[in-house]
Image (tube, rainbow, N blue to C red):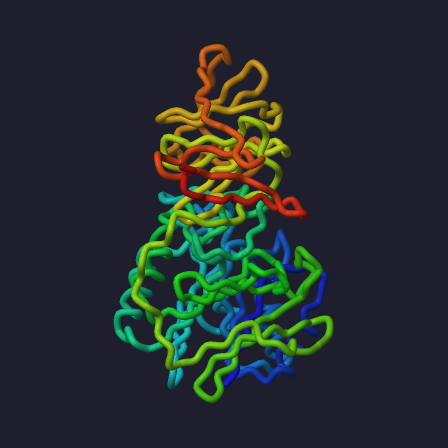
Length: 432
């Protein structure tokens, strides 16, 4: 039994995806799941684009197609910004023959949950590009998981859950604060899902348009194997055009990569799971460890703890990253107007303060709009004070040649960079 999992089909206007559909059909999948984000910028969610995708896969002879909705597909309907509620669902039904509803694919030895991104309602809207799933849908997912707690389960969502450890795109999704599922509407519930339901053994996502050659394009975290899925179109960010293949055979699930350039499945599998294996009971993750988050080199005096328990790192590319130490991720960069240059920053119990010339911009930790989402984003709320009135809170030191900061009375955080300028953090016990 074979499932093809196809990443974001985001492409240029006029670009054909017929050949991609033919290549998928040549793999003879029993089911094909598309991860969403179809077409081009001014066509997202429109019937013409959705029908283009439907016709391409139909013409190629792909059977049992499960086309999921991505965040860009519903961006114009989010908060009813540009189109009315129901616009995308009606276009989807016209193109694919049914409304977009979450599905559970039942097989003899495992289950697959296929989850759509939904448009945010007008009264509960933050950011049009969020990977949003409603509370109602999430409740239904939990109820379905409760039904068969011992049956191995594969999750498929457009974006991954926070804390999974997968590769991200710092200058795109991380800066826009839409790197993870429900980032503005309670991202922690997806992490809790993985903690509670130990039958979840794999999790596939797209969203990043990155290939499968990186060490962190597939990772195992708390017993769940997470996979990012590349893009086969011109929408690829790194030139790699990859699709994930799930094969079930002889009591095992084998995950492989199909390369759209070589037209072959890579010889070495990405991952093998024995269906008789079980995840161990949950145990809290150690605070210590090394993880990558953001990009750029931390500047002198550029590392401080915030009053919200998160780390703030100012880098030589003029950005101020907010680091969630519990989940070991960057949640975004603190917003300030592009009219100014970030020169320094400070933290206190309630605010992060950005020092820009004679201006000081203060952002509350509790403000969901504190992150940079777009240039001069109107949703950003801050208070402004003259620079002399703000007292900087120090706490940075150099340890073993690395810029470091105290986390608490037991641990410190050090920073360093890889050769390709990825920013790394290391949490370790304080030296005696």
